[in-house]
Amino acid sequence: MAGYGKVGNDFPINSTYALFPDSIEQRVYDPDKAAFHYKKSGHSGPVLLRTSDVAFPGAVDAAVLYQDSAKKAGIEIEVKREPGDGYWTNVWNAQPFSTSYWGGRPTQDLMYSTAYLSTADWNDTRFLRPDFDKVLLQARSELDDGKRKELYTDMAMMVRDEGGLILPMFNDFVNASTKQVKGYVNDVGNDMSNGFVAARVWLDA
Image 1 (spheres, rainbow, N blue to C red):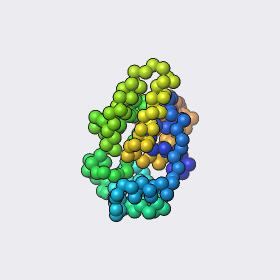
Image 2 (tube, one colour):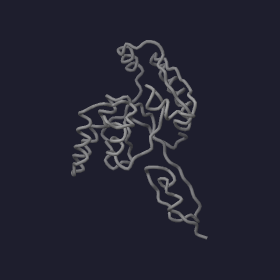
Image 3 (cartoon, rainbow, N blue to C red):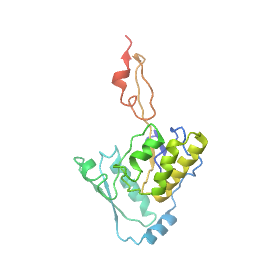
Image 4 (spheres, helix red, strand yellow):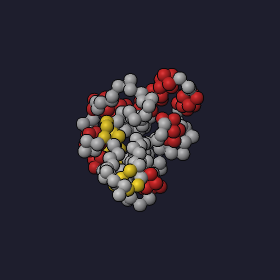
């Protein structure tokens, strides 16, 4: 990320969210533990990871780095570079293990509802947990921020420890403008003022 990013922790929420679950311990790579669980899974042979540069800039290089890291645990990753044309139709959310990216959502509820609710169309890790769905709905109607944060922490732990998401990093959105550009609104959810830069800004002659 060239210094413009933050380490992930295998759940899709970072510190830009108001109720970020900051009590969750940062996961570190343990090759021995990874080897133990790989052996316990009963899988043999390489694990196929499909990728493409359309998944996100640098996705192919990231897959190769992941491949190299997995070797320390005795896990063989076969990296398959897929064509960019049709990747989002034929690979993502269609094949078992692939690289992708997610743009931020305005709230934790929307992020989880879009990709982790059992009935979500974009549930690309096939995370199907009725107990998670129940907590998600409970958090949505909870007015006490302290209790709501506890619920979001429980949800993050479920995704982190029971789900199929591997989230190594969050990228920063880096934008720049001259002093003549007025009206720019910094939006933590996306780059270019959350896509509204053309409608928000003007040039001061």
